[in-house]
Structures are given as C-alpha cells and as structure tokens.
View 1 (cartoon, rainbow, N blue to C red):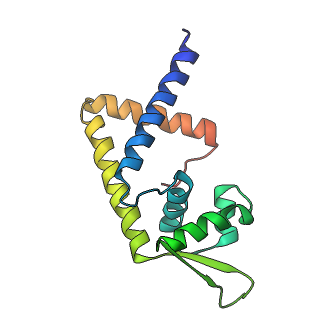
View 2 (cartoon, one colour; view 1 turned 60 degrees about the vertical axis):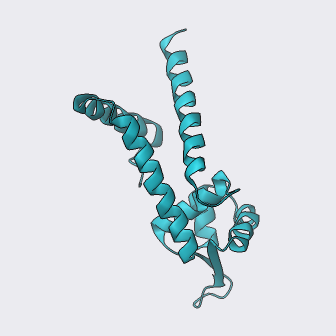
Length: 145
C-alpha cells in the first residue's frame, strides 16, 4: 500500500469513527447528519434566511425544506417570514435547538480532547500545522469554526 492509499484509508477510518461517536452524543434521537449540520450553521451565524442557509450548504432552497420541517416538528427551529421582505423565510434555533448544539459540541470536544491527550505537545502542534496546511490547500482559505 502506497502513502496515498494509507492516507486515504486513515482519513476515511478516522472520519467514520468520529462521526459515529459524535452522533452517539446528540441528545435528540434520530437526528440526521444534515439536520445537525443545519443546526450547527444556524448556531454559528444566527437566524438566517432559508436561501442563505441553502447557499451555505451548497444546495437549492427547496432541498432543505423537508429537513427544516422535520426540525420544526422536533421543536429545534422556528420558521417565520422576514418582516422586511415577506417573501423571505427566516430560520432560527429554538432554546431546545441551542441546547442540542451546545451539548453536542461539548461532548465532541471532550471526545477529541480525550484522543489528543494521548499525544505529546509537539505532536499536537505538528498535527495542527499539517491540518491547517491541508485545509488551506483543499479549501483555498481557512474555514470558520
């Protein structure tokens, strides 16, 4: 197995394991990856127009309608018309939605901290440098977290 194959296998393996562990920590049963991603985006930016949310997710607004409806049914987001432009729909987190995101982020950070605690300080610094460089190469710019 060459280095490229090894790197791909490791990235996939780590990603799958981390995703499984992350979703075990979400306090709402049956929340999908895309549903949590929507909650996380709204938590980061605040209330958004549905069109802005779709743009952030790189999908058409009609694509997220069903997902938003499910989040509303679960009491995680509210939807209302923009006061300035009645055609526009605003999506915001409810208190329950905020709690879900906060609890999940805390649990995720604890999991990651547990793994990183097994690395020496210099190893963590080197890992961070390499990940920042790889992100810049792949994304073209630093991502907002």
